Length: 340
Image 1 (tube, rainbow, N blue to C red):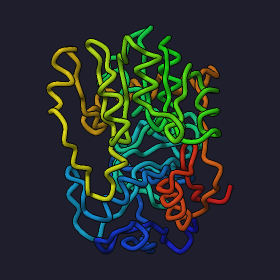
Image 2: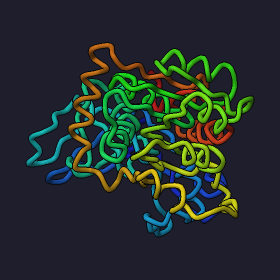
Image 3: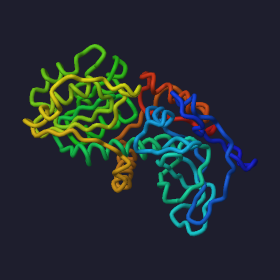
Image 4: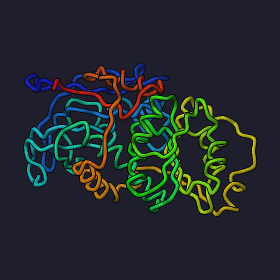
Protein backbone atom coordinates (compact mmCIF):
# COMPACT_ATOMS: atom_id res chain seq x y z
CA UNK A 1 0.00 0.00 0.00
CA UNK A 2 1.24 3.47 -0.84
CA UNK A 3 0.02 6.13 1.52
CA UNK A 4 2.07 8.74 -0.36
CA UNK A 5 -0.84 9.43 -2.67
CA UNK A 6 -3.15 9.82 0.28
CA UNK A 7 -5.23 6.84 -0.85
CA UNK A 8 -5.44 3.12 -0.26
CA UNK A 9 -7.43 0.38 -1.95
CA UNK A 10 -10.41 -1.56 -0.67
CA UNK A 11 -13.05 -3.93 -2.02
CA UNK A 12 -16.51 -2.43 -2.10
CA UNK A 13 -19.76 -4.16 -2.96
CA UNK A 14 -21.35 -2.05 -5.70
CA UNK A 15 -24.14 -4.33 -6.95
CA UNK A 16 -26.26 -7.20 -5.70
CA UNK A 17 -24.99 -10.16 -7.71
CA UNK A 18 -24.85 -13.97 -7.69
CA UNK A 19 -21.18 -14.01 -6.67
CA UNK A 20 -18.81 -11.76 -4.77
CA UNK A 21 -16.55 -11.30 -7.82
CA UNK A 22 -19.51 -10.08 -9.89
CA UNK A 23 -20.76 -7.66 -7.27
CA UNK A 24 -17.63 -6.17 -5.73
CA UNK A 25 -14.99 -3.85 -7.17
CA UNK A 26 -11.57 -2.66 -6.00
CA UNK A 27 -11.77 1.08 -5.35
CA UNK A 28 -9.41 3.83 -4.21
CA UNK A 29 -10.27 5.35 -0.84
CA UNK A 30 -8.98 8.60 0.60
CA UNK A 31 -6.80 7.92 3.62
CA UNK A 32 -7.87 9.92 6.67
CA UNK A 33 -6.04 10.88 9.80
CA UNK A 34 -7.52 9.31 12.92
CA UNK A 35 -9.85 11.53 14.89
CA UNK A 36 -10.36 11.49 18.62
CA UNK A 37 -10.57 7.91 19.88
CA UNK A 38 -9.50 6.47 16.50
CA UNK A 39 -6.46 4.70 15.09
CA UNK A 40 -5.27 4.03 11.56
CA UNK A 41 -4.02 0.53 10.81
CA UNK A 42 -2.10 -0.65 7.76
CA UNK A 43 -3.43 -4.14 7.13
CA UNK A 44 -1.02 -6.96 6.32
CA UNK A 45 -3.33 -9.98 6.19
CA UNK A 46 -7.04 -10.65 5.97
CA UNK A 47 -9.10 -13.79 6.48
CA UNK A 48 -11.63 -15.08 3.97
CA UNK A 49 -15.22 -15.98 4.86
CA UNK A 50 -16.48 -17.14 1.48
CA UNK A 51 -20.03 -18.20 2.31
CA UNK A 52 -20.71 -15.00 4.26
CA UNK A 53 -19.18 -12.94 1.43
CA UNK A 54 -21.29 -14.68 -1.18
CA UNK A 55 -24.46 -14.19 0.83
CA UNK A 56 -23.59 -10.53 1.42
CA UNK A 57 -23.20 -10.09 -2.36
CA UNK A 58 -26.66 -11.59 -2.77
CA UNK A 59 -28.08 -9.49 0.10
CA UNK A 60 -29.12 -12.75 1.71
CA UNK A 61 -27.70 -12.30 5.24
CA UNK A 62 -30.73 -11.75 7.46
CA UNK A 63 -28.81 -10.17 10.34
CA UNK A 64 -26.80 -7.68 8.21
CA UNK A 65 -28.77 -4.96 6.45
CA UNK A 66 -26.55 -3.55 3.74
CA UNK A 67 -26.87 -0.27 1.89
CA UNK A 68 -24.94 -0.10 -1.37
CA UNK A 69 -22.16 0.63 -1.81
CA UNK A 70 -20.63 -1.07 1.23
CA UNK A 71 -17.11 -2.06 2.17
CA UNK A 72 -16.59 -5.77 2.76
CA UNK A 73 -14.63 -8.35 4.69
CA UNK A 74 -14.59 -9.06 8.40
CA UNK A 75 -11.16 -9.83 9.79
CA UNK A 76 -7.75 -8.28 9.16
CA UNK A 77 -4.54 -7.74 11.08
CA UNK A 78 -1.98 -5.03 10.65
CA UNK A 79 0.23 -2.40 12.24
CA UNK A 80 -0.92 0.84 13.83
CA UNK A 81 0.30 3.79 11.71
CA UNK A 82 -1.32 6.70 13.51
CA UNK A 83 -3.12 7.26 16.80
CA UNK A 84 -5.81 9.85 17.42
CA UNK A 85 -6.25 12.07 20.43
CA UNK A 86 -7.27 10.33 23.63
CA UNK A 87 -6.22 6.83 22.59
CA UNK A 88 -4.26 5.15 25.35
CA UNK A 89 -4.55 1.46 24.47
CA UNK A 90 -2.62 1.56 21.17
CA UNK A 91 0.69 3.09 20.09
CA UNK A 92 2.25 3.43 16.66
CA UNK A 93 3.84 0.11 15.69
CA UNK A 94 1.44 -2.08 17.70
CA UNK A 95 -0.26 -5.05 16.06
CA UNK A 96 -4.02 -4.58 15.82
CA UNK A 97 -6.70 -6.99 14.63
CA UNK A 98 -10.21 -6.12 13.43
CA UNK A 99 -13.04 -8.64 13.44
CA UNK A 100 -15.89 -6.32 12.48
CA UNK A 101 -17.72 -6.38 9.16
CA UNK A 102 -16.28 -3.88 6.65
CA UNK A 103 -12.87 -3.98 8.38
CA UNK A 104 -11.40 -6.88 6.43
CA UNK A 105 -10.97 -6.34 2.70
CA UNK A 106 -9.00 -3.12 2.74
CA UNK A 107 -5.36 -2.10 2.78
CA UNK A 108 -5.90 0.37 5.62
CA UNK A 109 -8.55 1.06 8.21
CA UNK A 110 -9.22 4.22 10.20
CA UNK A 111 -11.76 3.47 12.88
CA UNK A 112 -12.51 3.70 16.58
CA UNK A 113 -9.79 2.07 18.66
CA UNK A 114 -12.54 0.00 20.33
CA UNK A 115 -13.07 -1.80 17.00
CA UNK A 116 -9.59 -3.34 17.25
CA UNK A 117 -7.94 -5.81 19.58
CA UNK A 118 -4.29 -6.18 20.50
CA UNK A 119 -2.23 -9.05 19.13
CA UNK A 120 1.36 -9.98 20.04
CA UNK A 121 2.41 -9.61 16.38
CA UNK A 122 0.78 -8.84 13.04
CA UNK A 123 0.93 -12.39 11.71
CA UNK A 124 -1.42 -14.74 9.90
CA UNK A 125 -1.45 -16.99 12.95
CA UNK A 126 -2.67 -14.33 15.34
CA UNK A 127 -5.25 -13.16 12.79
CA UNK A 128 -6.64 -16.69 12.61
CA UNK A 129 -6.69 -17.17 16.38
CA UNK A 130 -8.36 -13.79 16.99
CA UNK A 131 -11.15 -14.52 14.51
CA UNK A 132 -11.73 -18.17 13.65
CA UNK A 133 -10.12 -19.36 16.87
CA UNK A 134 -12.41 -17.22 18.99
CA UNK A 135 -15.41 -18.62 17.11
CA UNK A 136 -14.24 -22.17 17.78
CA UNK A 137 -13.64 -21.70 21.49
CA UNK A 138 -16.84 -19.75 22.13
CA UNK A 139 -18.93 -22.24 20.13
CA UNK A 140 -17.54 -25.19 22.09
CA UNK A 141 -17.76 -23.64 25.53
CA UNK A 142 -20.71 -21.26 25.51
CA UNK A 143 -23.08 -23.07 23.14
CA UNK A 144 -21.78 -26.65 23.21
CA UNK A 145 -21.05 -26.48 26.96
CA UNK A 146 -18.39 -29.10 26.36
CA UNK A 147 -17.01 -31.03 29.34
CA UNK A 148 -13.85 -33.06 29.80
CA UNK A 149 -14.18 -36.63 28.58
CA UNK A 150 -17.18 -36.05 26.34
CA UNK A 151 -17.47 -37.34 22.79
CA UNK A 152 -17.36 -34.48 20.29
CA UNK A 153 -18.07 -34.66 16.55
CA UNK A 154 -17.01 -31.92 14.12
CA UNK A 155 -17.97 -31.49 10.46
CA UNK A 156 -15.66 -29.83 7.90
CA UNK A 157 -12.93 -30.79 10.35
CA UNK A 158 -10.05 -29.94 7.99
CA UNK A 159 -11.26 -26.37 7.42
CA UNK A 160 -10.24 -23.12 9.06
CA UNK A 161 -12.77 -23.44 11.88
CA UNK A 162 -12.82 -27.22 12.00
CA UNK A 163 -9.09 -27.77 12.48
CA UNK A 164 -9.09 -25.49 15.51
CA UNK A 165 -12.26 -27.07 16.93
CA UNK A 166 -10.63 -30.51 16.74
CA UNK A 167 -7.56 -29.32 18.66
CA UNK A 168 -9.52 -27.43 21.32
CA UNK A 169 -11.79 -30.42 21.97
CA UNK A 170 -8.77 -32.72 22.20
CA UNK A 171 -7.06 -30.31 24.60
CA UNK A 172 -10.15 -30.55 26.81
CA UNK A 173 -9.68 -34.31 27.04
CA UNK A 174 -12.57 -35.14 24.74
CA UNK A 175 -12.90 -38.05 22.33
CA UNK A 176 -12.96 -36.28 18.98
CA UNK A 177 -14.62 -37.49 15.78
CA UNK A 178 -13.82 -35.46 12.66
CA UNK A 179 -15.69 -35.55 9.38
CA UNK A 180 -13.76 -34.58 6.25
CA UNK A 181 -13.57 -35.41 2.54
CA UNK A 182 -10.71 -37.37 1.01
CA UNK A 183 -7.61 -39.15 2.35
CA UNK A 184 -5.38 -36.05 2.60
CA UNK A 185 -7.85 -34.07 4.67
CA UNK A 186 -8.63 -37.08 6.85
CA UNK A 187 -4.94 -37.69 7.58
CA UNK A 188 -4.56 -34.02 8.53
CA UNK A 189 -7.52 -34.19 10.94
CA UNK A 190 -6.12 -37.35 12.54
CA UNK A 191 -2.79 -35.55 13.08
CA UNK A 192 -4.63 -32.89 15.11
CA UNK A 193 -5.85 -35.36 17.72
CA UNK A 194 -9.08 -36.84 16.35
CA UNK A 195 -9.45 -40.46 17.39
CA UNK A 196 -11.72 -41.25 14.42
CA UNK A 197 -11.95 -39.43 11.13
CA UNK A 198 -14.91 -40.26 8.90
CA UNK A 199 -14.36 -39.73 5.17
CA UNK A 200 -17.84 -38.68 4.10
CA UNK A 201 -16.94 -39.36 0.47
CA UNK A 202 -16.36 -43.06 1.08
CA UNK A 203 -18.19 -43.76 4.37
CA UNK A 204 -21.74 -43.33 5.62
CA UNK A 205 -21.37 -40.87 8.51
CA UNK A 206 -24.54 -41.99 10.28
CA UNK A 207 -23.72 -45.67 9.97
CA UNK A 208 -20.21 -45.20 11.34
CA UNK A 209 -21.47 -43.19 14.31
CA UNK A 210 -24.18 -45.72 15.11
CA UNK A 211 -21.79 -48.68 14.90
CA UNK A 212 -18.73 -47.23 16.61
CA UNK A 213 -20.31 -44.81 19.10
CA UNK A 214 -23.42 -46.58 20.35
CA UNK A 215 -23.59 -44.34 23.45
CA UNK A 216 -23.91 -41.35 21.16
CA UNK A 217 -22.33 -37.93 20.70
CA UNK A 218 -22.33 -35.45 23.58
CA UNK A 219 -21.48 -32.41 21.47
CA UNK A 220 -21.56 -32.01 17.68
CA UNK A 221 -20.55 -28.86 15.84
CA UNK A 222 -21.90 -28.69 12.32
CA UNK A 223 -21.29 -26.03 9.68
CA UNK A 224 -22.41 -28.08 6.69
CA UNK A 225 -26.09 -29.05 7.16
CA UNK A 226 -27.67 -31.66 4.88
CA UNK A 227 -27.02 -35.33 5.50
CA UNK A 228 -24.17 -34.68 7.97
CA UNK A 229 -26.52 -32.65 10.17
CA UNK A 230 -29.01 -35.52 9.96
CA UNK A 231 -26.34 -38.04 10.98
CA UNK A 232 -25.26 -35.96 13.96
CA UNK A 233 -28.85 -35.40 15.08
CA UNK A 234 -29.73 -39.09 14.86
CA UNK A 235 -26.70 -40.07 16.91
CA UNK A 236 -26.85 -37.61 19.80
CA UNK A 237 -26.39 -39.04 23.28
CA UNK A 238 -28.80 -38.38 26.11
CA UNK A 239 -28.53 -34.63 26.80
CA UNK A 240 -26.44 -34.25 23.64
CA UNK A 241 -26.00 -30.80 22.10
CA UNK A 242 -25.90 -30.20 18.34
CA UNK A 243 -24.36 -26.78 17.63
CA UNK A 244 -25.26 -25.25 14.27
CA UNK A 245 -22.50 -22.93 13.12
CA UNK A 246 -23.45 -22.70 9.46
CA UNK A 247 -25.18 -24.40 6.57
CA UNK A 248 -22.70 -24.59 3.69
CA UNK A 249 -24.78 -27.14 1.82
CA UNK A 250 -27.64 -24.63 1.58
CA UNK A 251 -25.59 -21.84 0.01
CA UNK A 252 -27.61 -21.76 -3.19
CA UNK A 253 -30.66 -20.68 -1.23
CA UNK A 254 -32.59 -23.84 -2.05
CA UNK A 255 -32.51 -25.85 1.16
CA UNK A 256 -33.41 -29.48 0.70
CA UNK A 257 -37.02 -30.28 1.57
CA UNK A 258 -36.87 -33.05 4.14
CA UNK A 259 -39.91 -35.26 4.60
CA UNK A 260 -39.37 -36.82 8.01
CA UNK A 261 -40.67 -36.61 11.56
CA UNK A 262 -40.23 -33.17 13.08
CA UNK A 263 -37.05 -32.50 15.04
CA UNK A 264 -39.02 -32.72 18.29
CA UNK A 265 -39.13 -36.49 17.88
CA UNK A 266 -35.34 -36.66 17.58
CA UNK A 267 -34.58 -34.67 20.70
CA UNK A 268 -37.42 -35.19 23.17
CA UNK A 269 -36.70 -38.72 24.39
CA UNK A 270 -32.98 -38.02 24.73
CA UNK A 271 -33.33 -34.63 26.39
CA UNK A 272 -31.08 -33.42 23.57
CA UNK A 273 -30.93 -29.98 22.01
CA UNK A 274 -30.07 -28.23 18.76
CA UNK A 275 -28.45 -24.84 19.34
CA UNK A 276 -27.57 -22.01 17.00
CA UNK A 277 -24.10 -20.50 17.25
CA UNK A 278 -23.98 -16.84 16.18
CA UNK A 279 -20.65 -15.36 17.19
CA UNK A 280 -21.85 -11.78 16.93
CA UNK A 281 -24.24 -12.38 19.83
CA UNK A 282 -21.40 -13.51 22.09
CA UNK A 283 -19.04 -10.53 22.05
CA UNK A 284 -18.81 -10.52 25.85
CA UNK A 285 -16.73 -13.70 25.60
CA UNK A 286 -14.33 -12.61 22.85
CA UNK A 287 -11.59 -10.96 24.92
CA UNK A 288 -11.24 -13.89 27.30
CA UNK A 289 -11.23 -16.39 24.44
CA UNK A 290 -8.59 -14.42 22.54
CA UNK A 291 -6.31 -14.20 25.58
CA UNK A 292 -6.54 -17.95 26.21
CA UNK A 293 -6.00 -18.86 22.55
CA UNK A 294 -2.92 -16.64 22.29
CA UNK A 295 -1.55 -18.34 25.41
CA UNK A 296 -2.18 -21.86 24.04
CA UNK A 297 -0.44 -20.90 20.80
CA UNK A 298 2.52 -19.33 22.60
CA UNK A 299 2.93 -22.53 24.63
CA UNK A 300 2.98 -24.65 21.49
CA UNK A 301 -0.31 -26.39 22.30
CA UNK A 302 -2.26 -25.10 19.31
CA UNK A 303 -1.31 -25.29 15.64
CA UNK A 304 -2.62 -22.98 12.93
CA UNK A 305 -2.72 -24.48 9.45
CA UNK A 306 -3.08 -22.39 6.30
CA UNK A 307 -4.37 -23.49 2.94
CA UNK A 308 -1.63 -24.20 0.41
CA UNK A 309 -2.85 -21.68 -2.18
CA UNK A 310 -1.14 -18.31 -1.77
CA UNK A 311 -3.46 -15.35 -2.31
CA UNK A 312 -1.80 -11.98 -2.93
CA UNK A 313 -3.18 -8.47 -2.69
CA UNK A 314 -6.79 -7.38 -2.84
CA UNK A 315 -7.13 -9.30 -6.11
CA UNK A 316 -6.24 -12.45 -4.20
CA UNK A 317 -9.36 -12.07 -2.06
CA UNK A 318 -11.53 -13.10 -5.00
CA UNK A 319 -9.24 -16.10 -5.58
CA UNK A 320 -9.39 -17.03 -1.89
CA UNK A 321 -13.19 -16.89 -1.85
CA UNK A 322 -13.44 -19.14 -4.89
CA UNK A 323 -10.85 -21.54 -3.48
CA UNK A 324 -12.82 -21.91 -0.26
CA UNK A 325 -16.10 -22.42 -2.12
CA UNK A 326 -14.48 -25.12 -4.27
CA UNK A 327 -14.13 -27.38 -1.24
CA UNK A 328 -10.44 -27.96 -2.02
CA UNK A 329 -8.96 -25.75 0.71
CA UNK A 330 -7.47 -27.24 3.86
CA UNK A 331 -6.85 -25.03 6.86
CA UNK A 332 -7.54 -21.30 7.06
CA UNK A 333 -7.71 -19.29 3.84
CA UNK A 334 -5.86 -15.99 4.24
CA UNK A 335 -4.71 -13.25 1.89
CA UNK A 336 -1.38 -11.40 2.02
CA UNK A 337 -2.33 -7.74 1.56
CA UNK A 338 1.20 -6.37 1.50
CA UNK A 339 4.49 -7.70 0.17
CA UNK A 340 6.27 -9.32 3.07
